[in-house]
Image: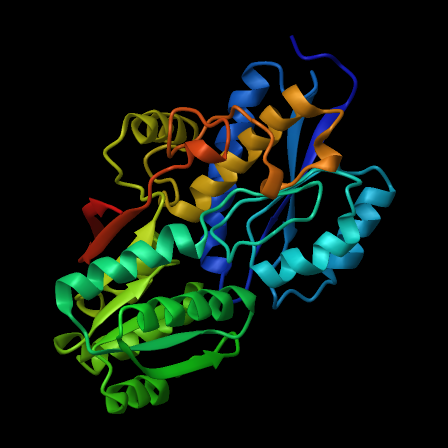
Length: 352
C-alpha cells in the first residue's frame, strides 16, 4: 500500500519547443506509463509518484539552471529524469550537485562521471562504431560526410567516427556543425553533393534532421549516397516523409516495432494507458520510461549510497525497460539494432 507522506515528485526535463520539441509527446507519454505502473504498486519510497514537466529545450525562454535550483532549494522535487541534449546535462550537473538523484536517459557521447548522475543511454562505441563498420562493409563508400548540430554530442560522436574511418582507411570528405533551428538546409546538401562523399553521418537532432533529410531527398542524393543517423526516431521519419528516407539507416537500442518480448510487454501497457491514438513509440520516449523505472530501482536498493556513485562505477539496479525484460548492471546492456527506413517505418536489418 502507498504510505500517505506526500508525493514523490520527479522533474521530467524534456524539450517542449525548438528543434527537439517533436520528441516531447512520446517522452511524456512513456514516462506516464512508468508512473502508472509504480503507483499501482508501492510508488517510490512508499509514496505516490508525480511528474512535473519542465522545458529543457536549448531554445526555452526560462533559465533551466535557475528553475531546477529553485525547485531543489524549496524541496519541490525529489529527483530528476532528463531526456534532453548533453550541453544541458553538463550545465545542470554543476547545479544539482548530488542533492537529488539525476537520471539522464537518452543516447549520449559517453564519459559522464559525475556522482549522483546516472547516464543510462547508449554511447558511440556501442552504437556508432558497429553501424559505420556494417555500412562500410556493405556499401564500400570511399569517403564520408559528417554533419551535426554544434554541441558536445555531435562533435564527440564525429571524433569517434573519424578515428573509425582512419582505422578502416576511409576518407573524410566533409564536416560541418550547424546552429539549432536552421530552416533551409539546401546549401549544406549542395556542399555535401560537391564533396564527393558516398555516405553521410547525420548528427542533427529533431526538426533540424527533418529539414536536412527533406532537402537531401529533394536533391535525390540518395541515388549516390547512404545515410546513417544514431538519433533518427519514428517521429523524425514521419516528419521527413517517405520519399525522403530512401537508403537511410538508423542505429538504436530501441525501435517501436522491435519484435522482442520486452517490447511486446511495453507496447501492451503503453496502449492500455494511452489508447490507439497515442504518440508513436520511439527510442527517446522509451528512455524516459526506463529512466523512471531506473530511478525507482536505484532508490529501492541504494537510497543511502547513490550520492557516491555514477554510471562509471555502476550500482546494480534492477529495473524495467522496453528494451530488455530487466536490467541490473553494465554487463547487461541492451543490444544495438541497425534498421533501414522503409517508407514511414523502420525495417530491422541486424543486431550489431
